[in-house]
Amino acid sequence: MSTEFTSDSYSKTLFEGLPEFQPGWVWLVGGGPGDRGLLTLHAINAIRQADAIVYDALVDETILSFARPNILVEFAGKRGGRPSPKQNDITLRLIALAKEGKRVLRLKGGDPFIFGRGGEEALGLVGAEVPFRVVPGITAGIGGLCYAGIPATHRDINQSVTFLTGHDQTGSMPDALNWDAIAKGSQVIVMYMAMKHLRSITAKLLAAGRDPHEGAAVICNATTPRQAVLVSDLQSIAEETEKSGLKPPALCVVGNVVRMRDGLDWLGFATQGKTLTATPLKPKE
Image (cartoon, rainbow, N blue to C red; front, top):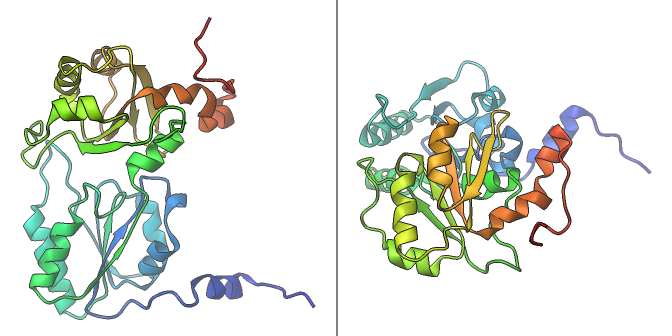
């Protein structure tokens, strides 16, 4: 006997058994790297139940359409070089809304705990005795590379990958990082928010002995219709990026996994008819 599913029954089945968003709670939810299709089911479940949504700059605003009508929606995005709300003010706002008995959704780009300051917000909630839940999201360092046809790991190339941020809380190049150790010990380096300091970063990696001909790429607006990918090598990537006019948000990746793009650029194949090769690591004649 077959069962016929209507849209209502399918929706009910889809969300059945997922957590109920309780009043007075804050959920820190990862919104993914940009493509709304990369949202998790837990994220959509949270959006559908929330009374208030406080969202970041890199969140695709179309996903707010999953929310109920007439709820409170506030933008709290921080972008480098532009007037932005202070982190402490955002945390205090989350606390205040929760104390009003609202179901508060803090919607963050990527994953809350990967360069998303979700830990800081969560600790603020703990101090204010506000209960919270964390919903992981696909981080740009994974999803963005995948959409560019660059695997974070590939058995024939690397068994490790290092994620780092290209600037600290002041906007300066991080001085707490051991660039010599990173250059010598990191097979693949994925850098968030590194475009501003890319020339200085690549200079440090080269000075530490990194191969100047190693693959490197910059991925802007990853996973969105505006995605742009620039492929080069370590010694040239900074100069070519500056000449290209590409702008943040961007990821930078260093490592020979970049060479895999010749075989794995599935998006280029689907949208532009790009010819792929089954042997991307084979030297070109």
